[in-house]
Image (cartoon, rainbow, N blue to C red; front, side, top):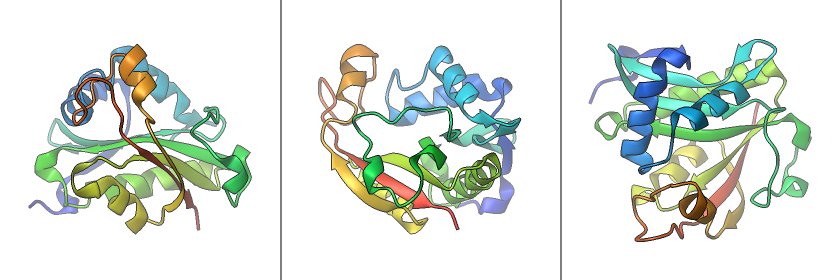
Amino acid sequence: MPTEDVFDYQPLAPEHFERVITLGNEVQGDGYLTPESLDDIYQRGWHNAINASYVALKGDRVVGFRLTYAHDKWDHDEWCTPDAWPVDPARVCYFKCNTVDPAFQGSGIGSRMLALSIQQAKAQGAQAGLAHIWLASPGNSAFRYFSKNGGQLIKKHPNKWRYSSIHEGYDCPVCPGYCECEGAEMLLVFR
């Protein structure tokens, strides 16, 4: 397994989009990312000329990405419980997605990209980051990863991605038909 130091970490940029979309759809399921959705996510990652989203490269290959919305670029929806957050909800960024190529999982890429995104989100003015963790990830690795990095469970939400599977073309890699996966609303307070 390669060690974390053999990877090049860069802020997400348009020249990475095609490779990020390919990796995202391979790992998360067809329709997870499109050029339009990734451009929207990219725009939401900026605040005060600071970008909070990252990619991990091995040569020219994108082997991981962390997509993060700035604290002022996302809306709290029915999957959020801001009254349970121990910080000002207006100062919470959104960790949209973390994806690592399965061939490189376990090599520290996810944690390094999260640390870089936190550094940038703090510089943007965020005090914490919220994520909806996919509880159906193999071995519940997403929940274990986010917990290991300081994330605290706020609430579990059944059918978190069902709407996306019905209306937005998301093809869940584990559910036959429409997605019925449970999402864990988790908050990581910055230190």
